[in-house]
Each structure stands twice: as C-alpha cells, then as structure tokens.
Amino acid sequence: MPPFLYLFLGALAIVSALGVVAQRNPIHSLLSLISTLLIIAIFFIAEDAVVVGFLQIIVYAGAIMVLFLFVIWLLNLQAEIGPTGHVVLKVFGSLGAAALATELFLFLGAPHLEVKIFHQPAGYGSLASLANTLFTDYLVSFEVTSVLLLAAVVGSVALARRIPNETGEGSSDPRAAGLIRDAAAATAATSRRAQG
Amino acid sequence: MIPLTYMMSLSAIIFAIGVAGVVIRRNILVMYMSIELMLNAVNLTFIALGSRLGSMDGQVIAFFVMTVAAAEAAVGLGIIISTFRNRATVHADELSLMRW
Image 1 (cartoon, rainbow over the protein chains, first blue to last red):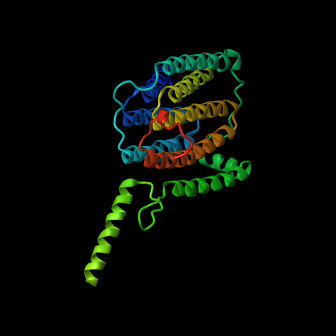
Image 2 (tube, rainbow over the protein chains, first blue to last red; image 1 turned 60 degrees about the horizontal axis):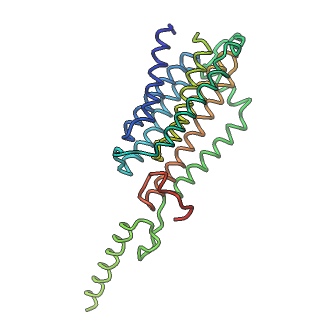
Image 3 (cartoon, chains in turn red, brown; image 1 turned 90 degrees about the vertical axis):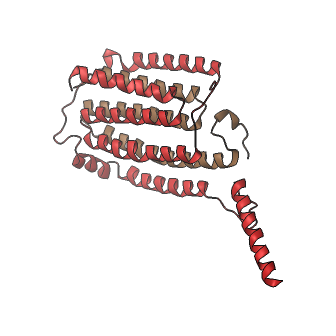
C-alpha cells in the first residue's frame, strides 16, 4: 500500500470515528461508524488478513450495523436538540481521552516496539490457514463461542418478549395494555348482546 | 508494508475516541457504537501484530472478538429495547434507578 493511500485512509478513519461521537443524529453516528468499519476492513486486507477483512465488511458493517439501524428506527430516535450531556463531563472526557491517546502513543507508537518481522508462511491469511488454526488450536474456544451465541439469541428473545395476560395487566407497554383492554371489553359487549 | 508505529498510533487514536464517546455522549445507542469503535481498534492491533509475527493467532482472536461483539450487540440492543418500552428513554442520565 503506497504511503499516501494509508495516510489518507487513516485520516479518513479518524475523521469518521470523530463523527460517531460528534453527530447529534444517531443515524449519522451510525453511518460514520459504518464508514470507520469499512476503512478498518481495508486495513485488515492490507495486513494480509483478507478473510477477516471481508468478514468485517459482511458481518460487522452489514449485519450488526443493520441491527443498530433497526433499533434506531424501532425506537424512532430523532436528532438531539439543545445541549447534550454535561459540560464538565465533556471537558473531562476529552482530556481523559487525549491523555489516554498520548499514553498509548508513548507505549505502542515508540520505535522500540518495532518487532522483528517474521517470515509469513505460505498461504498466510487465506481461508485455509484461518480454518486450520481455528479448528485445531482454537477448537475449544470455537465451540464455546457457539454456546455463547446460542445464549445471546435466547437471552435477547427473552428480553424483548412481552408477556401480556388477558386483562392487559402485566403488559409493560401501556398502549398494548389499553388495546388488549379494549379488545376484552368489545368481546364482553358482543357476548352480552348475544345473550340478551 | 505499513509501518507498525503507524498502525499502533491509528488504533490508539480510534480507541481513545471510543473512550471519549462513552464518557461524553449520554445516548445509550451512541455509547454502544463507541464500544464497537473500541473493539475495532483492538482488532486492528491484533491483525497488525499477527501479520508482523507471521502467526495466524491474531486473526483468529480478531475473529472471536467479532463474534463476541455480535453477541454483545444482540443482547445489548434487546436490553435497550426493553428499557425503552418501560421508561421511554434512551438517555443514560434518566436511567438512575435499579428497578422499574
């Protein structure tokens, strides 16, 4: 990758990451986040992690971000108007983040960290080598991950489920409770009319 | 190959921006997005170092991080939806009670 290209992409990634924090509309934050994820995927591919880069585009920028988008639509979130958050928190948050970035610079960006570059084996980053590592050295972790995903699916369905009873009491949504009560009243009226 | 210092600095900056987002923003969804930003910065570090060391471990761990992030997003968004249904807010400061 030529230097101007990665400098440009890095600047773009930082600007769009700042956009995630700075935008008032959650949809705009989300679009900035997707753009950051795509640029990071390009860096993955440039670092010989082709499979993980494409997975990042398909799974992360595709599926997970669409989940966020659906939630934003479902909750009908609008752009925040007026002052957001506390000024003190903003000042301390920015200062803390700047201090953290400086510290990480000193720690990670120092020239002494330049590791000895090892020879990459043939087929490095290919699907075959990824699968080979995943299903030999990391087999247990892989299986545990499947249990984790199953638990996440069951947990999120259980969380998002509502359990209304017949009178609508116990339903957490007052609108749904009202609808159920109206329906019960209509049924009662119909049966009374049928009897009388 | 991209210099390692450059990759490390980039991921440090993105991670710090994610931390700032969690601290500054009060919208729970945007705080979640900032957490995703931090996870991706860490992934960038894993991939860059793994590529320098010639080992596939970095890529496999990045893969696991992505899986855990997917599970975390599913559960977290479920919690946000059920909170919103009960309290009709996504503002973190208004969620100050540990009961409904």
